[in-house]
Image (cartoon, rainbow, N blue to C red; front, side):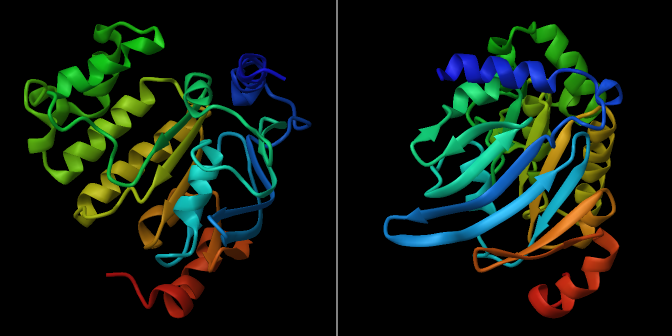
Length: 262
């Protein structure tokens, strides 16, 4: 199956509003016994997870647990050595068959990596202009970005690298949302940010999920994301140790893995 045909199938499966999709629809994202390695060292040891359509799923655990590595596998940046990744019920990654990352991105999958993923030497406006290759005009992209994040509108001519950490994360999210993603992957959204900024960002994450976007969030510190998550999982040493209700997992996370949130 060609990458283009595969991407077209994914677009067809994921473009309908969540409210119009029958309960028989497959999950938006599935990891089925996924394994992967750096060289000869296996770092993901058979992870199975299912993310429902239009939901926020929090993948939590300490540094080195393999959370970000799993996102890279999902986005096609790292091939699995075992198992499968499915989007909308369609296998996109398995050993010997990995969809091209930029093709998946154009068809609904969007990753905001740790470190924000912006162009620091371009202005805010030019960063947004770079997203016009998705088919939208700059004015359309700016309208959405500045309505969601008015602060960016005030700084549209400012170099992105001179923005505060929170503003840079807002810009990264604006760029991601301009692609109308069906599946949004967020890696350590709260890293280095003040709690009040993190709270604002996660309020927007909650609003985005209400529009039908499925969201997988990777975080080390739990409390900031648990308020908007529909389901959560704990990952330690390349394995998922527990999946459940976010409120039920909070105490276990702090006591066993994170040692309390700062």
